[in-house]
Image 1 (cartoon, one colour):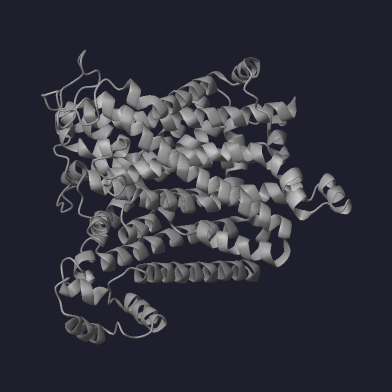
Image 2 (cartoon, chains in turn cyan, red):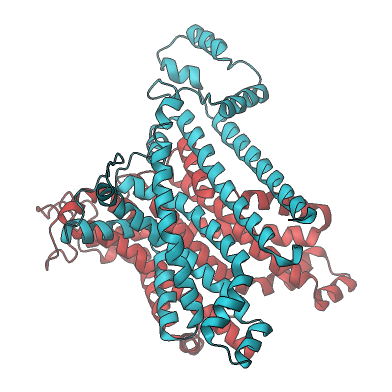
Length: 316
Length: 283
C-alpha cells in the first residue's frame, strides 16, 4: 500500500461518511414534515393543547428544527435512539435484541453463498458459449428476476410440506446444537443464498469473461495452455478486484432479501421489526432501522470500492 | 426510431429475435393484453365468493383453484394484473422520462449545472433505495400515488446515469458540433439532434427498470405495505393466501408464478434485443 492508494481509500471513506450524513438528514427531515409530532403521538388526540405544549417543551420539540436534527443525530451516535410511539419504551430495548438475529442470518447466507457463487461463475466463464454456460446464464437470470417470496414459498412447499425435511414455517433463533441450527436456518438461508449466488455468479462470470477477451488471454491459448490454467492462473488474478467488488455489491442484495425472508418465516430479526414499525407508523423505530440498514449498505459499497482500489495493480 | 406498426415490419422484427427472445416477447405482450382486458376475460367477479370451498385445488370451474375466502384465483390474478403491471409501468415511465429529460437538459447546458446534477444523482444512486421507500411509506402511507411516485423517484437515478452517458457521447459527435456552428438553438439541438439517438438504449433500459419496479412494488404488497385491500396486485394475493402455504394450496404459488413469468419474459426479450444489436454492429 503506497500513498496514492491510501489517499484514494481515504477519499472514498470521506465520501461514504458524507453520504451517510445526507441519508440521516433525509431520514430526519422527511419525518419532520409530518403533521403532529412525538408529543402529540404520546398523548393521543384527546390531550389538551396545554399539556401537549408542556410535553413538547419537556422533549425539546419547541427548539428550532436544525438544532433538533443535531440533537437527534447525537442521540443516534451515542445510543439514545428515542422512544417508540407504539410500545412507549426506548427503541434501544426493542432493537438491540434483534440485531444479532439478523446479522446471524445474513452471516450464514454470506458464508454459504460466496464459495458456491465463485465456483459457478468460474465454471460458466471456463465453458463460455457451451450449453452448460447458457443453462447457468438463464437459471441465474431467472433467479434474479423472480420475487424473493416466490423462492421462499417454493422452498417451503418443497422441503417442509412435501418432503417434511424441516418442520415449521417459523424459525426459532435460539439454537443450542448444530443439528438444531441446520433445522432452523436451512430454509431462510437457502432462499437468501439463491438470490445472492445468482447475482454474484453472473458478475463473477462477467468479470472473468472481460479478462479472457484481453489479448494476453488469447496468447496463453496460442501457447497451448489448458483452458483451466488460462482461467485460474492468468485471468483470475487479474479479475480479483472486480470479483471482490461484485461480491460486496451482491451482498447488498441481502438487505432487500432479508426483509422478505424474515417476514415469510416470521423470524424475529431487525427487518421484521422495521416492517411492523412501518405498518404501525412507529417513526422512531423506522428511523433507527433505516439508518442501521443504510449504514450496512454503505459499508458494503465502501468495501466494494476499496477492494477495487487495493486490487488494482496499476496503483501498486 | 421508426418502429411503424405495419405487419411486415413487426414480422421482420419478430424473426430477428432469438428463440428465447420470441418467447419473452409473446409472454410480455400477453400480460399487457391481460392487464388491459383482464376484467373482461375473468370468469368471475373480483369479489365473487360463490366458490364455497376455501383453498380448493384446480377444477374445471375454478382453473387455478380458490383463495382463502373461496374466490376464483384465476379471476383475481386477471384483475390483479392491472395493478401489478399498471403501477409498475407508470412508475417506470416517470423514472425513465424524468431521467432522460434531466440528462438531456443537464448535458446541453453543461458546465457547472451538469456537475451539480451529476453529483446529486450520484449521491441518490448510492442510497439504499428500497429502505428509503419503506421510510416514505411509513410517513405518507400506502397511497397508490405515493407508491408510484416513490418507485419512480427511486429508479430515476439509474435511468439518468445511462441517459447521461449516451447524451455526453452524442453531444461530442461532429454533427452536433456542426449544428452548433450552424447557430441552431439549444432546444433544437437537444430535441432534434441528441434525443432521437438516445431513444433506443433508453427503451432497453426501460424494460429493465420495469422489471425492477414490478419486483419492488409486488415485494411491498407482499409485506402488506403496497396496494391495500379491497384492491389487490399479485404481491397482495400471495400475502393474503399465505395461510394456505402449510397445506400446499396453489393459491400461494400461482400469483407469484405470474410475476415470475412476466419478469422473466421481459428479461428474455431485453437480452435478445441486446444480442441483436451487438450482432448488427458486427455484421
